[in-house]
Structures are given as structure tokens and as C-alpha cells.
Image (cartoon, rainbow, N blue to C red):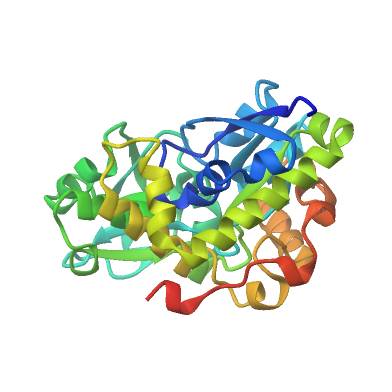
Length: 326
């Protein structure tokens, strides 16, 4: 038997529910079936996975497609490329107290928000402001390393007016804090204001794509199989995550996974294209928007951001399953 190809893989964050397809694929031998051995490393934000993957220590990763646009504009020679668009809707949000005075994005003017360092939603704040008419210069942002389960109660007590993050991450950690997110929080979601944006994607280095295309195809096939299994059995999927960190809150991470399937992965185009594919026209619109909002040094091409060549056949791609997310 041939020695497996080892791939060092950088995750978006600490082990969490919305990574279940990777771990279920690993536990059920799908990477091994493809001649691969995948070693996962916990990350420190979806956006930061992109430069970490580009740094050479990792072969593949789970990063933010919008952060990739920025990185590819400045460093085309070493930017990774997305090969499987997992999030066909943007997960970014600003969460505010539901009972508070902030009822619309423009009500954030003159207020203080809080964000984790390098948070993907915070990085995309200029695009949100451009779309909503909010002047970013009127908003103060403080950076905190506290977990969301600690930040949310402090925000509700008035320390901050809002919190940057992902909808399901914030909601899950609000549950961990013993609070009901549906009653306590209001969300201003990028998907409603900046609808062209994608979110997390499976990415590979230029070196891996060039020198080991069969490994890239195998990686995508294995992840697609893992995703199909997640759709069939949320309990087994959650178990696969908890095995990596038995101390985690199982209920919150199951809720986070279920919410991700319902929100970030259920755009109507996923019904026709299948999860993993991406619309070149939407990517082009996103590139133009980010360039205008941030003054990028150059416009990357769509092909620099997303390569569909490694996707499984259309009939093998996973489609949204509304009944799974009820």
C-alpha cells in the first residue's frame, strides 16, 4: 500500500460544530480512501486562515473567500485558491441587544462596537457601511479576546452597543451563557445588505494544486462525502466534533452546526449548483465591491479566487435539506 500523502490543514477556529464534515470524513476513513492523511490545526479566525495557509506551513485550510480577495490582490504569487465554497451565504453579522435603541444599521453611528482581533465580519465592515449608508468614521470599535459567551452579557449590560461575528457562533455562545439569543439579540446580517458575498471555503495552496492535483480532488471528494453524512445524521456529526474536545458544550455546538446548515449553506443557488460550487458572476461582483470599499492595489480575477475544476460531478454534490435544520 502506498504511503498516504500528508496534508497539514489549518481550520478557521477552535474545534466547533460547523467543522463536522471534516471530522466525520476523517473518522469514517474517507481521507484514507483517497490516499490522504489530514492533520488538523485549530485556527484563530476564518479571515486569518488565508495568510496562514499562504505562509507555507499548511497545504489546505478553511478560510474566508472575502479575505482571500484582499490577499490575492496584494500577493497573487502565493495566495491560496478556494476549491469548495462551503458557505454560499455570508455568515457575518453585528449583533445588538434586541431591547436596545439600535433598530437599523445607521443607528450604530456614534456608538461603540466590540470585535475579536481580525474577525472576518469586522474586516468586511467597510463593505457593510458602503451598502447601508453608515459612515464608518462615526463608529468606534474596541477589540476583545474574551469569548462571545462572556462578551454577550457585557454587551447586554451596556458596555458595547454591538458585537461583530458570525450569526450562529454568537447565537451558540449566547446559549452557552445561559441566554436565549432569539429573545435577547437582534442581528444586522451581511447576507441581507451585501448579498453577493460568500463565506467559508475549502482552500489549497498553489503548490498543492500545481504539484498534487489528484490530492486536491481526493480532498474535495472526501469532504463532500463527509458533508453528505452530516446531512444524514446530525448526532453522529456532533459526536465527531466532541471527540476532538470532550469539554465543549455539545448542545450549543449541535445548534451551531444546525444553524450553519440552515443559514450559511442554504442559498437558493445551492439547490441547482450543489454545495461547493460558486457563481462566477457573484464572485466578480464581490471583487468589485471589496476593491471599491478598500481601494485594493489590483483586481484579482475570478479564477484566482475560485477553481471549480476539483468539484465532484453535479449529481454527487450535496443539496440543502430543509428538514435537517428545523
